[in-house]
Length: 395
Image 1: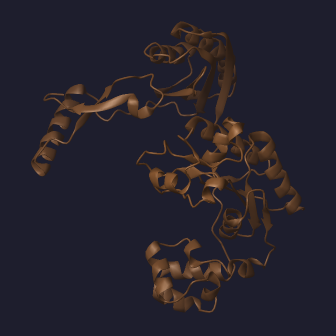
Image 2: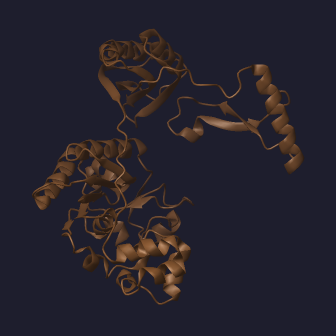
Image 3: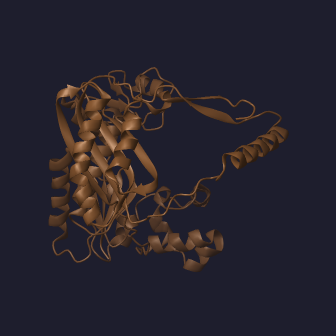
């Protein structure tokens, strides 16, 4: 088996530069404003060279790199780029696994010219998304991931069969996929490099570390038998409409959704599928897009059912600005059953909630349950849409 790992370093920082090309070459720090007491989410190469690292406080990052541009994470753009990279990788392999937010593994077994294929993957990612990625290729996912995550953006590291042991030997034991306590014990024993573990027998390491010892021994010997677990591709159909002039009312949005549904429903019914979830994406000008997820308790096949749910949601929204575009995605399923409620009857629900409340009050000495109250359903930031309030007696 030959496994490739694609790593995109600084996805959020790269997304900020793609959104605003004037930031290219400047230090960019993602996470919020420079005086916020929040952690750094991501940073560009220029900021990292100044000592900025993900996880440190933004105020500390400002002290290290005061000339940096501080920005919040653009969740919508990051998600769009993430999905675009997945679409590109699907064209090279039928088995693609999402290993992390910025790391993907794919099966390239049987590819004749591995380096040319790796180059094509990185080239297509740059052309299709503007992102720079690194790629590692070996007979095991651990070695490929190590090669990709330690390489410079745009680099390709191909490890030939049988060369994994020599490749991984100089790397620190901190990279091993084992608990922190195990890595600390290795450090106390004076074992700093993975290659040092190859000098021990499997029995020695198992006696000291159990199952982790067996895993470490195999990796130090250049063997990685962990399987690739391909993701389950969602069955999605989508359509979009550009609004000219931009829409200023919910009625225009609903009408646009009806037009898109008329195109999508024949495809859904011809495939014998039902709609389990509808995702509505509104593009405002100017401003970030707003995404609304509508999950159906019972999978729907009827257009009126879907449009009724969309209409009920859109009518309660407050638009920050005119909507320049609308995108509708339908998540399809073959399940026809109705999703069960937590409690079938309202009376039973209230009785169960009352008993639960009393049990919690007697245990903690106060009533810890809160009620979610909708404040602004159209707010861009999720934490501003709702708030927690005290739960009154009888609710």
